[in-house]
Image (tube, helix red, strand yellow):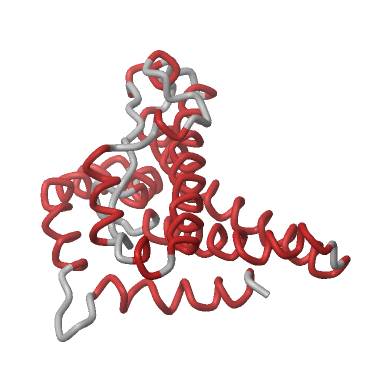
Length: 210
């Protein structure tokens, strides 16, 4: 992504803005749901805010800039403050990807309305900025639904399983980073992650970006 700073500075700035929106909304939603479920930990740690600085991880941001892959600062919660720790953890985890899809859908509706009513300046700005916001929120939402630790999908699956099956499932957590690296590393110019995500992302992008 950093190479766009020199080849297309405007595109670089728009993508940075879209990433900040996607990551901030994602992490804030985790914090908000945890707070609503009775855990004050995110609020005490200053995560119950839409200030992007509260949700950015230094190394995750650097990886995003230089490698196009990164992460935000994970929202911490205390399962002992939750009424049903496993299922509530699944709800907290679901909040992040769900919020990204909501942002993508709302942005798509706004973009279509502006195109329909043809508001001169607003339409021009929207057609430049909103497609990136839609696309990056789709990517972040789909990626985090993958059932691999430390992604949200892992805890979501754990919350859907029976107690016995969940214990077996959580034993896979120790191998999560290994699985994730195997998916990310490109083989013959393409990664398994791309093969898995592209058939999901492409129709969503075509649906939401006019």
